[in-house]
Amino acid sequence: MADRAPLTLAVAYPSAVARPLTGHVELALGQALSRRLPRPDRVSGVLDAMFERIGGAVVSAEMLDRLTSGARAWLLAKAAQVFLPGKHWFQAQCTSCGQAYDLSLSLDELPRAPKPELFPVIEVETSLGARRFEVPNGRVERALARCGPDEALSVLVRETALAESGPRDIEAFTEGDFTAIEAALDDASPDISDQITTHCPTCEEETVARLDPLDFAFPTTKGLFRDIHDIAKGYGWSEPDILALPSPRRRIYAEMIRGERRR
Image (cartoon, rainbow, N blue to C red; front, top):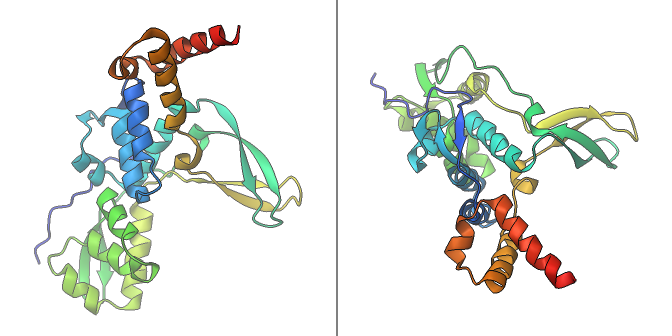
């Protein structure tokens, strides 16, 4: 039985070269973080805005689609550390008593699973015989974001199947097949967890805090536009010139202008 070539790149936790941080990067981040976009598109937009190269190759939409879900989560955490280096305080809610509590954490402490031995292609014995699958990537994430909860498992299996008979197999697989395929894909997918297990300081029960860098780690464009306005008004510079400034230098100029106004 013929199989299609896998799309998923065989890299678990790739190296990355960040773009120099300028207003252009911050503007691209602001556009990528629009709540109107599905989460997979937001992640791809952040990675495209933040990184010049991933795994030694120039970043492209095709590459970001082919990265494993775990690699994408890993790179998202790396991008977030540009703005939140070292330890920071986060607020979470206890899953037992519901009380809010503070958690001190560095984003590089998020648990990371080791690279599985079988990666990125696995073989699963099903009621139809052996079938090969590739671990989920960005393209699969986007397909899952477009479907409902009841369709998610069949979409996952369809999108990761390598056999040309995949569409027909979906109709013939048993419930046990779907369960086995999902479990095998999960075991074969390297991942960085967005959950931290700790103990609630109020009830002392074990609780889990979920941290999504998209929710808190990246700057909004509000401060950027304020800087552009103040610098353009104070120095008469054009917006493209201001956006091209390194972000730390832009903020220094903007703060100098505001300081003079406060005198």
